[in-house]
Length: 319
Ligand SMILES: NC(=O)c1ccc[n+]([C@@H]2O[C@H](COP(=O)([O-])OP(=O)(O)OC[C@H]3O[C@@H](n4cnc5c(N)ncnc54)[C@H](O)[C@@H]3O)[C@@H](O)[C@H]2O)c1
Image (cartoon, rainbow, N blue to C red; front, side, top):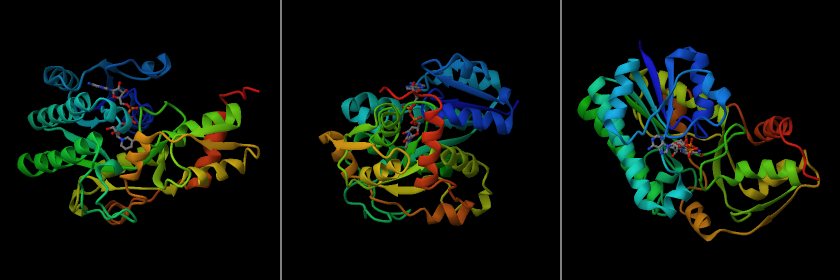
């Protein structure tokens, strides 16, 4: 049956990756799964949905067997800010879920996609143009689970021949599903507030520089790395990918080109600021460009225009 299984499908990435996969491979081939229902009944109706806790090996095996799954996009995880509040739960979900997925993939010969993050780097990593292969000593539980995950994926590829591939994604910006509690969530919230109130209070400092990507580029990158010619892949797993780099101040200036009276102020959240300060200011995605022709379509200008247009069609100004 050669089906595709997506864990954590009701989240920010899954809400756009599942439709993109269904468009490419056919609606019935893609089994969306999560521990919560999709955000809208319409989304659930567009193809198969199963309730699946990815930390439960027997549930995973049963769904894989029943649907003839050959590829697993493993998105279920706890994001950086929430993970710092509940580190024990984050370890169990992020590491336990991945382990269960890799074991099932080994048993049923499935390929696996694993999303790592710029959070897999830490304060001792070179912070500008962070190389593909470099120091990874993160100081957050999220980062610890992502480094452990990258290593576990490499191990299953080398030891058991599981075709595991992955990306280190930067902050993702989208208008479909709300972000799930990450340090870069401000770059999504700011658009909702700009349209509704023409004002946003940012939880990161004005000069906090981080890499970002618009969701259409992220779903394209995920599908492209999974389809890449294995003979060209030197890294396979944990490719640095990026599309743009900005600070809250710079994003506010870009929004002001379309919403001239938009104002931003700052109430810094020390916990999320500390996470951002431990991450790279920018990353080098040369390996992804060289090994599978990665090239993003959206820069900050194109992304801002599209976000305001798509959200503007849905949201009304509050006053
Ligand atoms: N969004 C980003 O900016 C970003 C950046 C880099 C990496 N990532 C990674 O991409 C992946 C997906 O991120 P996202 O933004 O869509 O996250 P999200 O928080 O929006 O969604 C995660 C989903 O996982 C589900 N889930 C939680 N526990 C589960 C369990 N036990 N079994 C099955 N599902 C469960 C949740 O219900 C949720 O729908 C994560 O691994 C994340 O670390 C995200």
